[in-house]
Image (cartoon, rainbow, N blue to C red; front, side, top):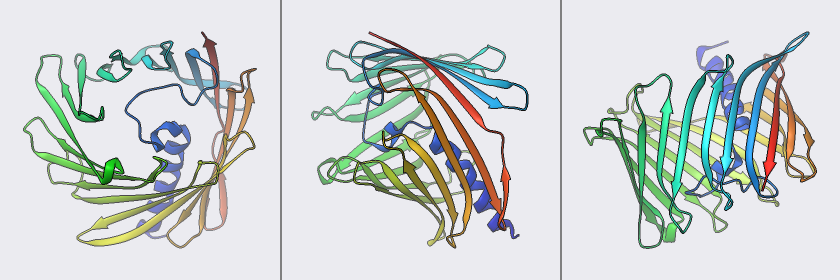
Length: 295
């Protein structure tokens, strides 16, 4: 197998994992951390993540999220497998429910970081300013809105105010993200310059159904992979299928859920299979258990 082909297969598996664990909220235009994906007025969500092994379930991490009475996420704490805190983040909102400040601490970094949000006259995010514990600028993001907000351009700058990344996101009339492009400059730390492109499509229920990834180097665009999503009758994501640039199936993931009385899942079991040259290589199943409290 060529290095390029192997990269595509591994990258496909990695992205399926990321998309499977990320909130569907990230697929939509939003400037708040909310519990809109939960039925009812959730007060807190405690999630435990496990690897399913032969005789036991091995805890890998825990998350604890809390929400205010308006559905805004106000605090998130992440723990590693030993119970030590790996990160703490806190959000602050104005009376209109707009997030105005975000504070985060990570165990592998020094001190607290704070992000301040500035809004334009249409109440859209105009700037994100992140500073270190000492008050020094760490990053700046400037938002520019075109086509009545259906195209959003984000320009990211480093502490020396050099442009590192330009992100262009396009939304349809329903505010669903349909395309995204990231243009990376030479000042982007840890990466070669170039561009990445994504395209998204949705089913009749508004669920993300297909995700396409492209890479652009020296003006040449290469189509690398596609992920297809399927859902159960309740709208929960039940399957992800990864395909390479030739349309060959390279990975598949399935989810099984158990629900509480409000219809929110409290147990999710995920299985993943990597496929190479027609041979399937199952990986360890993963288990997530949620405890949800309500107002």
